[in-house]
Image 1 (cartoon, rainbow, N blue to C red):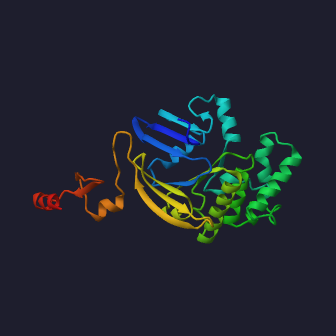
Image 2 (spheres, one colour):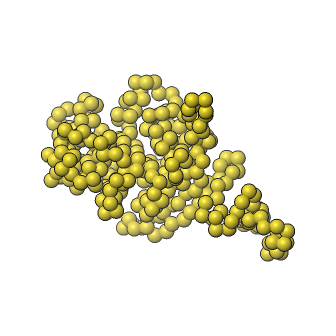
Image 3 (cartoon, rainbow, N blue to C red):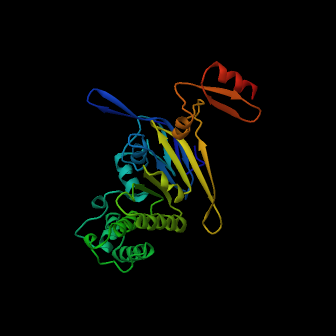
Length: 296
């Protein structure tokens, strides 16, 4: 391990609920480059939020290895975990009430994490003003959250998350409670900050339409990564290509996209054909279809 900023190796997370064991992550592998802006996408219960909590130092895996930058998250003491969450990671939650204190202004909300990190008052004020200006809220410094729109509150939340200059920004459904126009502004804000500060951005969502707003989308299914969509951009920042991949794990398991399975009515098992430069995957439709495929 060491080539990527984030490296997850064979992560397993098992929760105990009464007498039951719930497997949230099942041997998950993931690598994320420094400065990448990517999304973890999947339905509820797929494991994406569990992974976010582990990357944020809020939870620890049952087995496996996970590293963020120079930090091995399984070796941190309780005090080191607190410092890691305070100095290395910034969080943006879906619920604005979890991001902002209602009795503080936007400026005071951004200053608060720096105060807890013992940043001097003058520097706190200057950095908070700069961040709020960068997220397009330079004229809302003294507004309380209830005088801001939902999209504006989330942009303040991004400034709060960036206050201590983290290397990793984790956003849990950051656009779940805003309209499409505000969502576009929120993603653009995160992209600008990612490019200017080199921060790695990981967005957790169930909304697959985020593919147009990030560089890479990793699909989750049953506690493992199943697919990736990688977008390549031109020099002007516009997307120039998009390609979908399935994830092949260390023992050769492959999860086909659900849309492919449904389109071809694949059930229980599939047939494999090794060709010169590819592997064919076919639905099992009986002997007649098999003979026809063998001739193809």
